[in-house]
Length: 137
Image 1 (cartoon, rainbow, N blue to C red):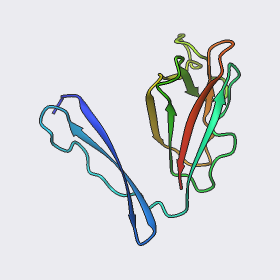
Image 2 (tube, rainbow, N blue to C red):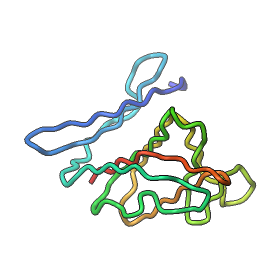
Image 3 (tube, helix red, strand yellow):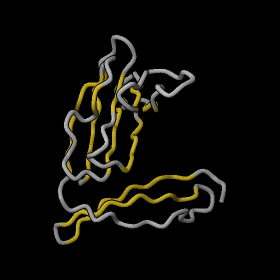
Image 4 (tube, rainbow, N blue to C red):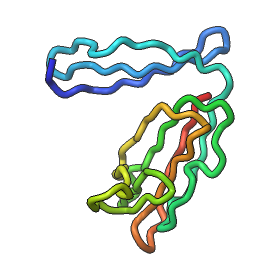
């Protein structure tokens, strides 16, 4: 394949049990690039709006118990980027292990991550950026 991929997210509700699937579709051929398996999410979906500041802080402050995956949405109405990483995350691209993964305004960052792992977020100096966190358990 080798072309760029579009990512589609699907949330299914059958018999009051939620399932979540991500599909990668080749942007040129339209063919499915990966097998999709519903994760069988049955416990809860939670959503939180949280301010990200220039001090690295857990995102969310308290994780949804039993979490399997999460999405972090930096709304397009924001003008600043947030940075995702570990407790020492920095809001920059610097050689080493502290630079965060940027999430630009209008971007959603989706990852499979349990509630046993704490994700941190940080903004540039003197910035306060509201973001939406959706957790699937």
